[in-house]
Image (tube, rainbow, N blue to C red; front, side):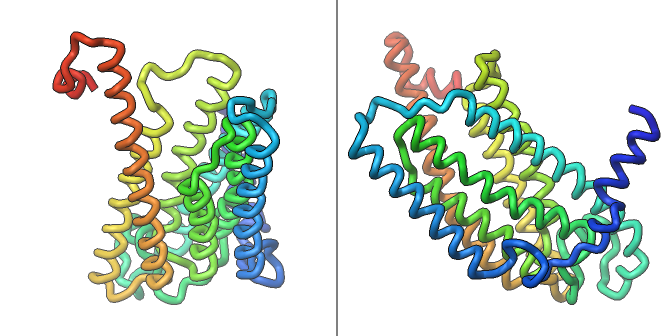
Length: 296
């Protein structure tokens, strides 16, 4: 990659005047009000549930609605958006660290990792990283289309999916509304995993060979869950050591939501692996359950 191309990408992802001058404001930023957030989540749940009930009444359960490659194109779009946001917030975080490091002594911040975990008190939702946080927030509504595709193709609507997608949009809104600490690391890890997961879904959606590892998508999500748990512990430690991190109240609410999402995910993960073990036992009668556990 040439130096000119790298310079151009860096400019458009972290140094463009609109990105540098971004400010989260209810009067200027689209979809930035509480009323929009609550209405959107309500409509998402209502439309998904109504569509599920309507199709259940009209069509047989084993008859999906043909969508062609529309879900695969959506996966490609989400993968590209996630990769762009990942690159943008990574470059923007590096630029913010470079430009504001001289101010850190006032907030007892010594290293970039401490800044990533704990924004100084009084931090406002403006500048580079919050622009990409805003972009991530908007993509949460595009991500909700996965539920519609699931209802149309598999005729299935999971309450856990409704909750997790709604919670993610709500959480992303809290990050911006209260300039919450830790959001940079959360967006970096989430967009990195999503770019891989959605890219994988696009790849396999066109009949190309998938991963040799079973449950590739679920295992990627498990890695994301572990990263979030470690980061949450780091935020709490920094808050106690430094005497305060910005948006800690929102972080507490975020932790409760993440805890509920974690329980739902672990329940799904255990049921999935139990189902996999039963299939192995049924297809290999000579194996005992203990052998299945060793092979997993």
